[in-house]
Length: 350
Image (tube, rainbow, N blue to C red):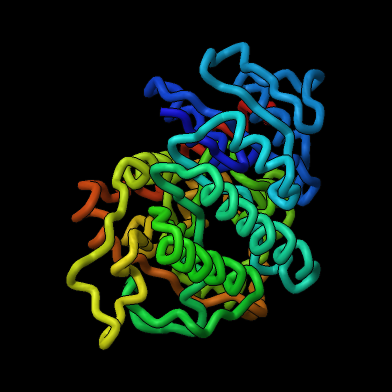
């Protein structure tokens, strides 16, 4: 199988590419390597994948020195002509779209970035899949789409019409756009609502990274909502195993689906949405405790109110994922945090 993975200089895309390559699949990875966070970490991920930084030029394929079936291309989703040319050349079997402008809080500062990448860029992906048909399009959504919903656990059958950030709205728009193309052009699409992904090679703007940086410098960590937060923390290794299984599970449409009582997570069209989370919410203070244990150091804490656009709790119902793929993420926070700390110390020599 030949896969296109967008965002392979990113956190999840990096890990997924390795998993599929180790299985023996062909992978073409693309990324625009923007400066939303430290590009040196992005180049380090690419280097770990056998991609030489010095050979990277816009739109020029670079072969991996580590994986013979891996090619990387620096490309932006918003560049429609380049995307179309890539699809025409490569004839992908499966597309996994992980490239996105991430971050809830940053969407309050730079909303245009979310429209350019998460909306316009996704339209280009859909149009390319229409012009050069694929067996399956899998794309990243987010637990953020649940927004003002307080019914726990979050189910894909829940209404998600009340987002609390533009980031969440952009991810919900992806689900709506995907359904339109599944209906109009019979493109099998699956959206994945990720729940607080963490682990080695993670993003520097995420809580675990910010916490370990502050603790290492003997500075206080910022604890929002005065610590009264719960998150369905999900280890990246579990996430990519779930993505792999979902990519292998092509939706065909549900004959039981009814427009009289529409289920938002499925359709008569070849369309599906899954939650991927640990389905085991952890108190933020317990998460911090796991980090303190792994570091052997107690954190200084600055207690702050809930941030705009944030929610106090997340909890994934993964019943559909388990039923359809036989898989449920299950790495404990203690194990996952310890693996992150091990990587962090090795990578930053701390």
